Each structure stands twice: as C-alpha cells, then as structure tokens.
Image 1 (tube, rainbow, N blue to C red):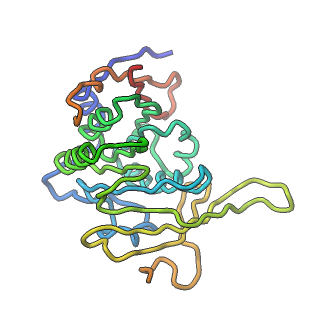
Image 2 (cartoon, one colour):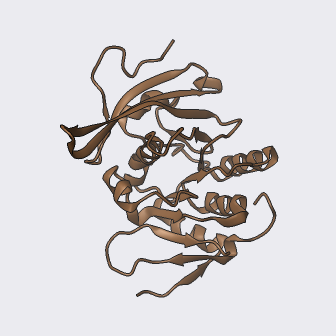
Amino acid sequence: MAGRMVVGSAALAGLVRPASAPDPSGGHRLLPVSPELTGLLPNRGLRRGSTISIAAGRSRHSGTTSLVLALLAEASRTGSWCAVVGVPALGAVAAAELGIALDRLALVPHPGPEWATVVAALIDGVDVVVAAVPATVPTSVAHRLAARARQRGSILVPYGRWDGADLTLQVTRGTWQGVGAGRGRLRRREVTVSARGRGAATRPREVTIWLPGDGSTRIVPGPARGTPAASPTGRSVAGRLRAVPPDVDVPRPLTLVAPA
C-alpha cells in the first residue's frame, strides 16, 4: 500500500491547480456543463467566482446527489479539478457513471469541526468545491467563503441551505425506472430541476432530465421541457489534512482526511 503524505493548503493548491491551470483574470471564466443543464444556468455554464447552491432533498433518494455529480461531470471531463466535502455516502462508482474523472476528484468525507477552514483551503486550489452545509453556518462565514471563491476564481457549490447564493438549484420531483413486475435493476432516474437566483438568474427556470447509469444526461422528451417556467476562522487545519492515495494503479478519487 502506498504511504501517506501531509498536504497543507499551499501544497494542495500546487497539487491540483496545475491540472487545469485556470487564469481567474483571463478569458476562461466559464466551465462547461452538459448541454441538458445549460438552460438552468444564466451563462449556460459554471461561472468562475460564483456560488451555486443545491438545495438538499427531503430524502436521501431524492436525486440531489445525482444532480451534484451531473453538474460537475463536464467540467471534470474537460480537465478541471473538483472536490466534494462532507458527503461520505458519495461513491466512486456513482461518480464515474455520471462522467466524473476520478483522478481529478478530491473527497473529504468527514471534514470535522473545522468545516469552513477545510472548504476555504480547497477553494484555494480546486476549480469546483461542493460542500455539504452543516446544520448551522454563520452568515459571516458564508459571506467570507463566497468572497474567497470570487477572489480565487473558483466555484463554490454549497449542498444544503445557503442564503445569498447567485443561483439555487433544487430537485422538485424524481422517479426511478428499470424495475418491472417486482424484479429488475434500477437503471435511470427522471428528475425535474428548478433554478432561481439573482441578477440574470432572477427568472425561474425548470428542466426535466434523465440521469441514467451510462454516464450521460438526457432531456426527457415532452412538451414545454427545458423552457423557463411561469480561511474564515483564521486557523490552519488545512496544513494537517492527510492525503490517502489509492493502493492500486487505477483512477481513484484523492481522499483527504481531516484531523480528529
């Protein structure tokens, strides 16, 4: 098994940033999304420096996690680094099926009590940071993280309740298909996603798509589909994150373990 190494915030930035080498002040201000999701985004892509929240579903079967992965897939496929914080149930197989490049994915399943500091460190070195929001996040901390993303040219994707986001996506309906007569395999999920936000995103939008298991995302055929509808704490926990590399030579997510 490969050994472990200690990665601080600066080292983490050096580890992942060269993979995509974005220039926050240059012309690469948008990261791509799959064509089926472009209608939800005012710029038809993920704008660097923005905060795009994903409202948590009412149950773990709501399809929200699949939406998170689908939102990252195209950016990941084209070379961007992504990180997911605080979602221990997220599996590498599900990520790969929806098109995530596992060798450019960093996972922090259990960020610990210094959640905000871990997220801030990842914003410094990762293109897109998805962060499951704890029960309570002070408004001041939320504002500082959003400001840090704007400054660094990263995209912050809070997963859960988050006031003040530029755009909020929410799965409003979701159904599985693939099981018949009491037997079979769940093969794909139909989800309806709504979008609302500020500025250019003020007008509500809604799209219904398939999130199948073959790694693609498709619009569900039907009338009127896809059209508009009527370090904040000052402490350096990042310096003690441990990177746990895979023990076999196949693409695997980079797992970061926060100190207890």
